Amino acid sequence: MNIGKYFILLCLVFSGQVTGIQKDKQDLTQFDFPFLIGDWHLVNTLSGSGNDAEDYLSIRLQLKSSYMFAVQIHKKDSSVEYWEGDYTADGNTLTLGAKTLTPQVYSYSATHNQLMLNGVIFYKALSRALVGVWESHQISGYERTDTGVEQLQLILQPDFIFSIRVQNDRGKEVVHQGVYYTESDHLVFLFEDGEHDAKFELEANQMVLNLEDGAILATLKRIY
Image (tube, rainbow, N blue to C red; front, top):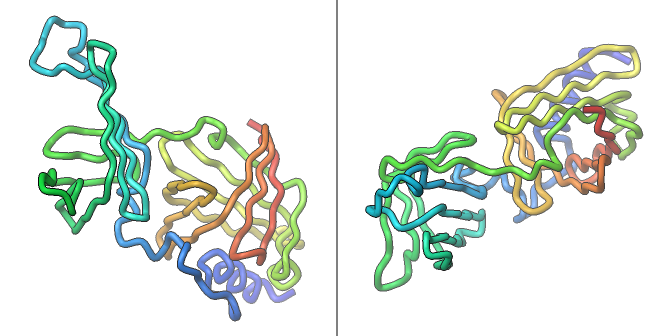
């Protein structure tokens, strides 16, 4: 196999540009504000200091690609306030309850794992089941022969940094590094040259990763 062709094909598979592959409406790479998506948490570090200015223990804010949100506020008296609805966003403004009579408007900035609302920092939470070093046990898919993919290693860090290393049948490697986020069964990789929306199934210490609607299907096992 021509190794130059291998690199090109693999990069195309990973960026979703292989001929015949079309992105559907559920492809999260089409969402305009990817760093907003997630399960965000704020803990009141002054909750036991006698400061009654803030009556909450913690706040959980969920933002989805469907432009729906949910807020849970756990208060010091053990009660829980819940609010859900739709939101709108632009480059620096987030509006919760945009279609209500009392929308809440926040200035925001976001990274892959932090969301600042009016100067208050929320941290993104991740299921611990995804974190780890994963190595391929079996690889299939209709693009496997063309790409020559032989082995795949995926590292998912709890701070939403990833590294994916792919090796072909001649031992040549391609490495992508970047940040990632999740929603439902979607695992989205953002890297220097683009972004890619994969789907995953997780059971115990095994993950099935579906790249580009079956172009590459990798069964991975956690090794760490």
